Structures are given as structure tokens and as C-alpha cells.
Amino acid sequence: MEQEQITVALAGNPNVGKSTIFNGLTGLKQHTGNWAGVTVAPAAGIMKEGGREFLLVDLPGTYSLEARSREEEAARDFLSNGGADVIVAVCDATCLERGLRLLKQIVAVDRVRERGIPLILCVNLCDEAGKKGISIDFKLLEDVLQFPVVPCCARSGKDLAALNQAICDSAGTSGCYDCLDFSPKQLARETVRYTRTDYRRREEFIDRIVTGRFTGGLIMILLLLGVFWLTMEGANVPSRLLWDFLFSMEPRLSAMLTWLSVPDPLIRLLTDGAYRVLAWVVSVMLPPMAIFFPLFTLLEDLGYLPRVAFNMDRAFLRCRACGKQCLTMAMGLGCNAAGVVGCRIIDSPRERLIAILTNSMVPCNGRFPTLITLITLFFLADSFSSALLLTVLILLGVAATLFCSWFLSMTLLKGVPSSFTLELPPYRRPQLGRVVVRSVFDRTLFVLGRAAAVAAPAGVLIWLLANLRPGGQSLLASVTGVLDPFARLLGLDGVILTAFILGFPANEIILPIILMAYLQTGTLVEMTDPAALFTLLTANGWTGKTALCMMLFCLFHWPCSTTCLTIRKETGSWKWTAAAAALPTALGILLCAAVNLIWTALAG
Image (spheres, rainbow, N blue to C red):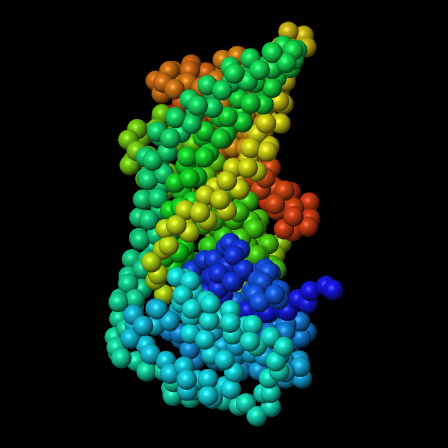
């Protein structure tokens, strides 16, 4: 006979540790974050105990079943449809009253009362409550509610066995809630005791600084500067080691293909084309991402990202957009595709679309190598000054995001900004093991895999354009010649503009394509000597104006292929995907043309 499956719903406010409990009970590794809105769709996993199989459903965090957002709608619909056999309401021990308010709404759901679905109250974060001098009378709480109350410290795995047992014991039973009526405020007063009246003094003091009107913005800029400096300083050596290793494998790959009797032109196509571009992208992308993503995840685990959204909320409100867009914008610093997916946390369809269309205004990790190279060659050589100028460019991207958000909200996407609940979670000590695992496997390797998937085919195309010579001139040279007049209006040249077009699969290969076209080698080359690279660029007509215009166009141009495909998937529309590509490109063209005109006028 088929084994009966018991459905268990985990419900609760955002940021109470539901996903951590879900991971602990099922063994899955769902993403958890110290800010609201991480889980925007129910996640399911299997727990087996005592010969029975339990399907655990992690519902999106919600403050109320009076649905005002997609998360609240998903949680409300699941509970109202009576799809659960057991409901575990998870609440925060440091804020019991808020959890009890949601619990009272769950108890009032018609299907819950009609079916007598058994309830369990899981009071999580008891360790944090203890540190703050908060004690809870769990026996009294259970006597009033008349169903199991389980204290829990899910982050350390403590007490999950007791919750597991409570779920097993409740399965198959029936609850009666007709006579259950309680005041969340009064019940919290009766069961909660505070032994420290100043338990929030330290957090409030830190928040006054971190979210202060002037200090909040300064701290954001300094943290951004620090992250970029650490990324630039830390990525140099591992990038060089990875480069040497991957390119040392190229002759071996060529020898293996020769041994397999592969024709020589095909060998060159696969090694000089597909493999070399792939190796280039991996060696340039992986080390910075392996540093940037853990730093970003540390800030997330610490609880700082919601403070960033709080600081930026006023600016986005003036643009008739949503303050949560700041979080998705920050995700875009690592990968614009990840930032686009992160826009799901925004409830309003209009504001979500604005966030998607403007996400690529902030440069992703793949554009940093080109920006850093141009900064160090033409403007500032030392790493700290380079990081400072890179931070200025990022802030320019933030300003452009705000401007374009305002422009869209006043034209194509008119509307009034919606309200949303933004919880400032407690500061928590990051769990370094989980930070490393999540940032490396869930982010770094995921983004790298998507970039690598398009890098190899791009390498084939670039090699063909550089080596097919009908009429004695390569196709690459023909294309650059056609684009050159228009590119000159932007302070660039045909080679640079062609490189941006061919770099559509991955931004990391833009500069290598430029070098290949200038040297006419027919394959990607690297110039490790900065002086030699500077000499080559200036010999081909580069000036400070060229470098500045290229930096601006690198900052504002169409998203990469991975991001465009992600936009298509999230919006379901090629029209909005085209708009997301056209918006930053139009801004980049206007800025480059203006800089070219002003620079030329001043020089003349």
C-alpha cells in the first residue's frame, strides 16, 4: 500500500527562523537571510519519522492573513484551502506578541476550525531572548492555548528533536478551537518577563548611527568602499594563479585533440576560440566573486541590508518606487541576473517592473575588471584610490537608478508608491560556515556556471569573425569599420563598440576582444604588463577622453545575455526585455556623446 503523506505547514512572521527550522527538519539547504521577504513562494521538503512521511511546507513569512502582498496571499491561500494536516506557527521569543497576533488569525481560519487541524506553537530564538533577559512561562502559555508549545533554538539545531516529536504526536489528532479566545497583548504580558530593562539599548544606539540621516549614508559609502578594496586587493593573486593553471591546460587540450586526429582548423577553433574565452572568463570572474559574495552575505546575515533599504526608502519614495528596490540593486552588484530574480520580494507589479528595468544601471561583478583596468591605467594607480573612484562610479549608477525609476514612474509606469512593512531585524552574529557555503555554491558557482555556458559559444563566434577573411580582410575588421563613424560620436571607436556587442554573452571578454582586434592576432591575448597595455591603447588613439567614455559606456549599456534571459523569464515579455536593454543603452549613449562634445570643446 502507498504510504500516507502528512502535510505540515510552517507559518510565521518574516525573520523568525522558519527556513532554518525547515532546513533542520528536512535536511534541505533553503536560502535563509536576516531580512524580510526572502521566501516569496512556498518551499517543500520531506521528513521521515517513525515509518511515516511528512511533507513540510515552508510558507512565505507574513505579518497578517489580511493579504496585502504576494507572500501574504500565498500563506493565506494555503491555510484557507485546508491543505495542511498539521500547522506549526513559528514566532520570535523576543517579540512574542506579534507572533501571537498571527496565531490568533490562523486559529480563526474557517477550514482550520472545521477540520480541527492540530496546531503547534514553536517559540524560536529562545537563545537570543535569554541574552536579552527575556523569560517566557511556556507552561502557562500552553495551558491557555491548549495545544503544544515548543521552545526552540533552531540556528544551533537545539530542541529540533522536541519539535519533531510534537509534529509526530499531533499528526492524526484533532483540535477544538471554538472556545479559544485570547488577547495577544494580555497573554504576552502574563507569560513574558523582562529581567533587563535596557536589553535593546545597544541595538538602538547602533541603529541611531547606522540609520542616521547623515551617518547612515556615510557608513553605506564606507562599507561599499571597503568591500571593493578588499575585492580588488584579494583577487589579484588567486586570479593570476587560476589564469596560469587554466592556460597551462590549453596545450594539453590541443595535444589531446591532435592525438584524436581532429582537423587542425577545428582544433584551433576549440582551443583558441571556445576554451580560451572560457578560461579567460573563469579566471577573471571567479576570484572577485569568491570574495565579493561572502562579504555581501556577511552583511546580509548580520542584518545590515534592511538598514540600507531603510536609509534609501526616502529616496525611492520620491521616485515613486519601492524602498525594497535598494535590496535588489545591492544584489545586482554581484550579478544583475540575481538582482532581477530578487525583485520578486517587491509586492507591487508596477514597482517590481521598475526595479527589473533599472537593475543593470548598477554594474555587476563582471564589469569590474574592465573598470578597474581603465581606472588604474589612465587615472589612479594605487588600489585604494582605484577603489575610491570605482565607488564613485557605483554611486553614479545608483543616481541613474533613482533617476530612471522616477522617469519610468512618471511616463510608462505611472502610479502611486505602495506601502510596505520593513522590519529591522536584530543584529546577529553571522554563521561563517553557512556564509561560505551559501555564497560559494548558491551564488558564486551559480553565476559562474551561467556565464561559462555562454562564454564558450561566444569564443567560437569571436574566433570565426577574427579568422574568416573574405577579400583579405577579417569579418571583425569589416564590422569595426562600419561601426567606427557612430562610435566616434561617443568618444569611442569601432573596435570598442564591436567589443561591447560581441561581449553580450559576458562582459569580462570586452577588453580582450579590443586587444585582439588591435593586435590582429586572430585569438584572444593578454598583456600582463600595464605599461605595454597602455602603450598599445594610446598607439591606437586612446586618450583620457576615450577611457572615460568607455568607462561610462561600460557602466551604462545593455545587460548581458544571462540577465536578458532572466528578465524575459521574470516578466514573460520580450517587449519589457527590450526596454530593459534600451534604457541603460540610451543613457550611456547620451552621457558618452555629452562627454565627447564637452571634452572636445574644452580641448579646442
